[in-house]
Image 1: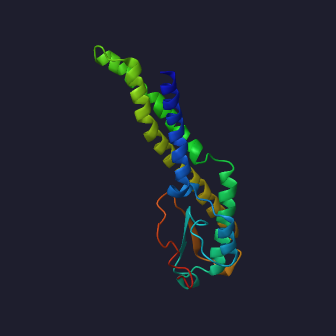
Image 2: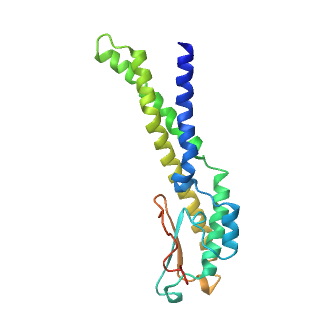
Image 3: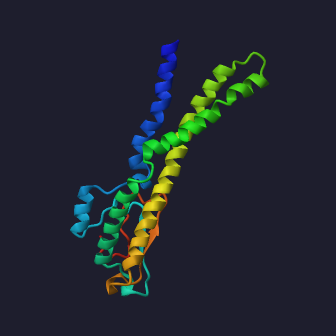
Length: 199
């Protein structure tokens, strides 16, 4: 009997962590550019990971409506810097999943006393266990979504703020703007359409 409870405990504790491990590729807030992405950016290339939390747009009244490759490179450099600085300070996917799973699981245990009060002969213990387990996974998913949104917001805002520090220092940067993308970055080709020579 005790080993059964221990097994269930490990499953409950492990599910949010497993979800957290999967979240790095599923939620754009948790994406961070790799050293290979940084090399690509230095070579003047476009990295979807470096721009995972932002979109880059161009005011059509400046620079012929085109984003300068120099502006793109600078924005990607700032974004990578922001990603690494923010990652060190905010909860990652595992912690975010646990942050959602624990309170939801505790709330789900309230099903036990409710069942006992509503149904004669109902086992408060059994229903509490059922409710706790049933709520853990939705809680973990909610934690991942909330954490990713917070990460994307922080990384995107950081990049936009860094860009605003220099946007008026170079004529090539005129009319180029950074927009925070909280969720739902394009899974396909996310190169800004206004980029000069975009492929």
